[in-house]
Image (cartoon, rainbow, N blue to C red):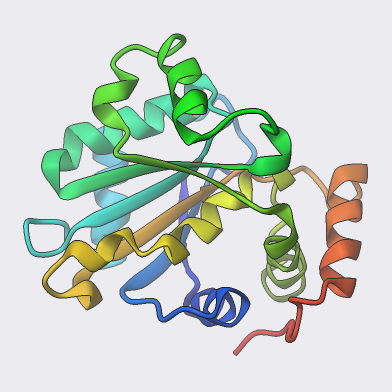
Length: 208
């Protein structure tokens, strides 16, 4: 697993969604290796290496795509084992993917497939596709990171401001999981990338 600080993405999200965001934002991604052995020790070391403190006064918010697989589920349960009540796990999806469902419906369907999921997930959300396309272009152009389109909604989870419940929101760490692609030439990636270039929300597309 890799962890990447992306403070410039937080600024982009503030512009796209017209909100004020607090805390620090990171991406966690999987090096395109689905055989990667996720364990609590490696995850703990990953956060220590980035000087990320998680305790009662420094909560961690973990955002993951609604399209769970066994690897993401293991990532989720490992983080929960490590940080218990000091982590908030949030699942996000696109409204277009679930046109006749709401957040609770989606979560209920997942709970029927994954053990104890209802006791692990704190929040869930569905967002509009049109405010996420520029995430593809900015991550691709500035970081050479090519993310699976379905997982990009996890980056937008921070704008929901769950952390505002905390006494000091600047002490919050946000980590968004994104699934990487082998190359930027996949048809779905190209389609989203082009929409990011022409989207009305895309008022800037460079690294700060």
